[in-house]
Image 1 (cartoon, one colour):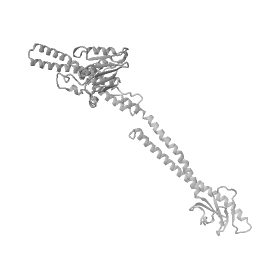
Image 2 (image 1 turned 135 degrees about the horizontal axis):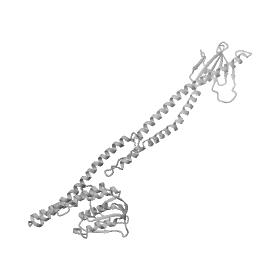
Image 3 (image 1 turned 180 degrees about the vertical axis):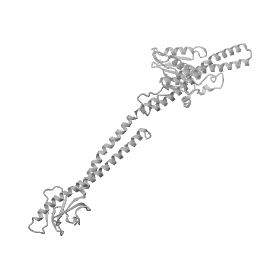
Image 4 (image 1 turned 90 degrees about the vertical axis):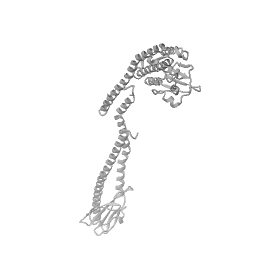
Length: 446
C-alpha cells in the first residue's frame, strides 16, 4: 500500500493541498486582521469625534465650572467604548459610567496610542481646552480576531478531508487503465502470449504496451520454435527408431550367442524407452500448444473405454479395471486430450504400482480417479511429481528388467499441463483415502 503510486501521489497532493489551504487561510487571516484594525480605528475615531461634539455642548452649557459628571448607562448592554473628557489642566469634566480613570493616561499628543489593555484615541476641541480620550479594550479586538480565525478554520476541517477524498477518487479513476493493464498481464503465461489490448489506454501507457507486445511476440516465437522442435524431432525419430528395433529383432532371431541375445534385449528395451519418450514429447507439445476445448460436448466414457481396451492386451492384461456410470458423462475437452490424460494416468499407475490391480473410476460429475497400490509417496516427492522428468523412488530402480528403463518422468507433467490449460483441478494424494498405502490421482473431465 505504501509503495503504491496512488498512495504516494495522493499523499503528496494531499500535503500540497493542505499546506496551500492553511497558507491561504493564514494570509487571509493576516489581511483580515489588518483591515479589521483599520475598521475598528475608524469606528473608534468617529465615535470619539461625535462624543467630543456632545461633550463640548454639555461642558459649555454648564452654569458652574469644574463639575465632574459621570454619564449613566441607557441599558444593560455591553459597552465596547469608555471615554473621559478633561480640561487642559487634567480635571475630569465628563466620563462614561464604566470608565476606570486610573487606566486613562494623560496623552501628550492627539491620535491613536496602544496601552497594555486598550487602544486609545485622543482628540481636543475649543482650542485644546476640552480633551477627549476614548478607549476600546484590546480583548474586544482579540475576540473578534479569534472568531474570524474560527470562521476560516472550521470550513477547512470539512474542505481538506473532502479534498483528500476527491484526490484519492480522481487518482483511482485516472489510474484505472493501469489496473486493467495489470489484469491483462496476469492472464498471460507460456500458453497465452497474445498481444495486449491497446484500445482506451492513455498516451502515457501506450508506448509501454507496444513494447510489451513486441516482447510477447518474441517470446511466442521462441516458445513456438521450441515446441515445434520437440514435436518435429519426436516425429522424425519414430521412423529410424522403428527401423532400428526391427533390425535388432531380426538380429536377435538370427543369433545363437546368448551374450549377443542379452545385449540385443537391453538395446531393444532402450530403443523402446526412447520411442515412448518421443511419444511423450509429442503429447507434451500438443498439451502446450493445441486447442484443448471443443464446441460440441460428447460422452467421455467412450474415450476412456477405448484407452482401457488398449491396456487389456499384452503384459498388462487384466490389471486395469475401469468403472463408469450408466448414464452419459458429457465433456467439452478435446477427445485427443482426454485420451492423452487417460493413457498417461493408466500407464503411470500400471508402471509405478505394486503390480496389482489398478482401479479407475469415472463419477457422474466427470471426475476421473485412478488408484494404484504401493508404498506411501512422501509429501516432497508428491509435490514434485508434476514437474518434468521427475519420477518417484519406485521408478528410479536401476535394474533394466524393472521400471528404471521404462519411465520418462513426463506422464504426470503432461496431465498437469493439460489440466492447467483447461482449468480442471488435479489432485495427487498418498496414501489412498481409507487405506494404509497407495497413490491416487483425481482430475475433472466433465
